[in-house]
Length: 288
Image (cartoon, rainbow, N blue to C red; front, top):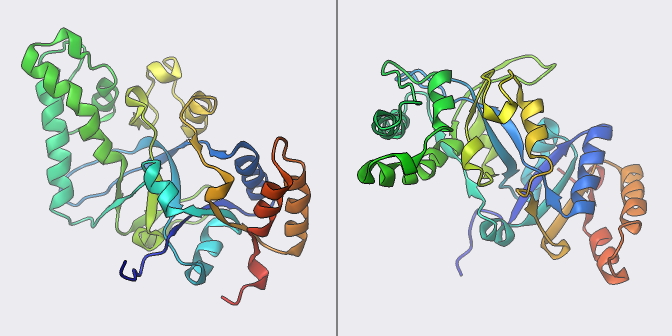
């Protein structure tokens, strides 16, 4: 096998301080990641696009010596798992589009031209030809292939697969706004080298921002409320301790605390506990 510039590990970072520490402990004790809805929008100079929510777990594709900037952006509590595990679980790199891309408008048009064909056969779908808006996106969740003619039924049955392309789309560069932080106007998203796990939830794959729908009981909810709907679902992303390559903590105190926590994990052999402890890497010890 030829040498690759890409690493064989996928990293997920949980944040800093108590929140990041608690999230990492939850991941380790449950041996799983819980998808959450992220607010997304692919901005294009050639087509108007809305904000929407997509359920996902995000990872990044770096070598350890390249992680310093990522620690600054996403926190110093994290976990790295083998890329082989990620590929077997269906993770995939996102598709980065420049805001002047010719490709993204073509993909966008194809997705909603198919939607237009389906809508003709379903009176509950209110298609508006000028641009996709919140009403149109909500209608995506109401497609009923069994009520359509044979040809449209075939098209409708394939539509969730086509729509899933949208859940892996991201701008190459654009505005980044996090809660409680100043807006960054030209954030280079492609620097994250993001991989995603998007669970198979066709009835709630793309949820428009601030739109009442069947998932939210007809109420206007944000992503926190949407996350409550999937936190106990069957769509968690599971792993085994053998898949773990790195566990990151910021300092020696955090390492000792995490060791004490790992010692309390039930139904694991002493060998497994020792193996997991050996994966802990203290960021302050790294020469980055």
